[in-house]
Image 1 (cartoon, each protein chain N blue to C red):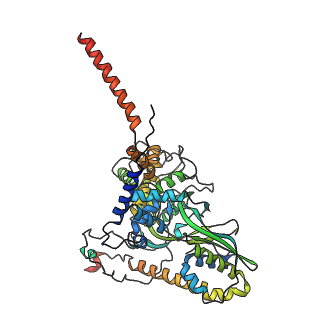
Image 2 (cartoon, rainbow over the protein chains, first blue to last red; image 1 turned 180 degrees about the vertical axis):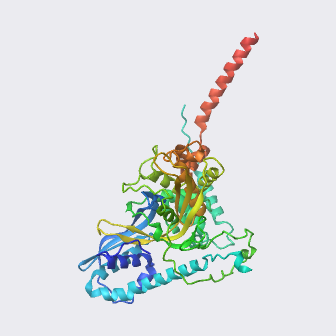
Image 3 (cartoon, rainbow over the protein chains, first blue to last red; image 1 turned 30 degrees about the horizontal axis):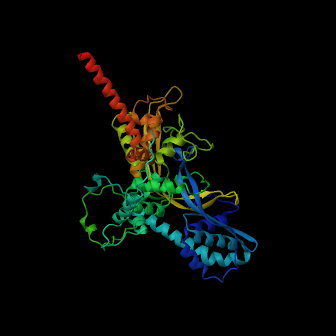
Amino acid sequence: MTQIETPSPHAARQHWMATLARASAEDLAERLATLPPFPEPETLRAPETGLVMVRGRAGGDGEAFNLGEMTVTRCALRLGAHIGHAYIAGRDHAKARLAALLDAALQDSALHQTCMQAVVEPLAAAQQAAHAAEARKAAATRVDFFTMATMR
Amino acid sequence: MYVAVKGGEKAISAAHAWLDETRRGDTGLPELSVAQIEQQMALAVDRVMAEGSCHDRFLAALAIKQAKGDLIEAAFLLRAYRTTLPRFGASAPLETSRMRLRRRISATYKDLPGGQVLGPTFDYTHRLLDFALAAEGRDAPATPEAPTDMTDVPRVTEILAREGLMQREALSESEPGDLTREPLSFPASRAVRLQNLARGDEGFLLALGYSTQRGYGNAHPFVGEIRVGHIGVEITPPELGFAIDIGDIGITECQMVNQFKGSRTEPAQFTRGYGLVFGHGERRAMSMALVDRGLRARELGEEADAPAQQEEFVLYHSDNIEATGFVEHLKLPHYVDFQSELENLRTIRRAAEAELREAAE
């Protein structure tokens, strides 16, 4: 799913940010609604849509080249002592705000555990399940070669 | 003589109103939603994202709706939109060996690790019109599933490279050139050529790729591998200082394996042509790979006399937004230009007639 090399000192945060980036705004709002409300965050950078140039490699493993751009939305909020960041594919401002809010909450040791259990873990499990279902469909289209000789 | 022409606003506004009406078509039929286009015209969306050089499925679907299904017009709309957005940065280069595969086939090895995975493909369909699709409300049958062990799916090119039979790609950590920032210049780097081809017109790439197979360029290509699937995009925002995954995009990759006779410094070996495109676009990725290999002719010390090997010709004519802009601008008023041409022609004719009269006298 991710290209991130482990171990990294940021592995836990990278995991939740990747999970939040793949969820829909509706999913995030629905999961957040199961938690006691957070204090009002301070907006450091309102949701803003821009572009990231996606790069590939010549031959798959050679020098980098610019493949094309993709839309990305970013947002930064302060919740208590923590700054939450979101960079997410697409143009959904509501989702970027929710992802940044959760990123801040997840850095707060008092909120971390409940946010992981109520939001990140179920979303990660659903994403894993969707990927696994796709992999099973792909596996069903794998060709099993047999030679005509075995048919006689 | 310059004559400013005003007027036409009323006609233009009436024409656009009629365009809106024809876009909607028969109002007795339900209107297409952008989500329906995104889901059910998925390959058109992929093509518009590739040629628009901007990955955003919703925007591409909206552009298709606005363009009444004219995919070049839709790519044009997407390119225009992207110019309104700031650039946040560049991603880490995609490590396609780690993509989540829907499809992975090789025409060079039957029994390769990871196997031949067909995925959702038109290949092996009979190309008979399916009238059952004309009846609405039919649900697609459930897709079969099988236990999966897609853990080890090595690249075909790597298998060959380990044996020393495939030329390794040059490695460089320098910033790749960017066509959206600097205009083309020649000779173009491989990175710039690949960017140009990745967003090039599919028909143009297909025809050029085809020409290399038919003898204009002496290619003898094999599909080493085609991969179709999804991959996470990773960026390192400066305020964070570490890499984060911002979500998945769909991509198609083609590794074309080509012969290379060798040179004074290199033994005979295979060389690569490479195709990588947004979305599911095998024809596009394969064509790109054929043309990429064609454009490597000079670097590999081959003759470069076929159209697909001529860098300036290929790179200057691949972009359908530029091409359509220049071709279609001919529709715009050229009244004054034409008046001067007409005047010119009349002068020539008068001079010729005068000469004829003099000769006759």
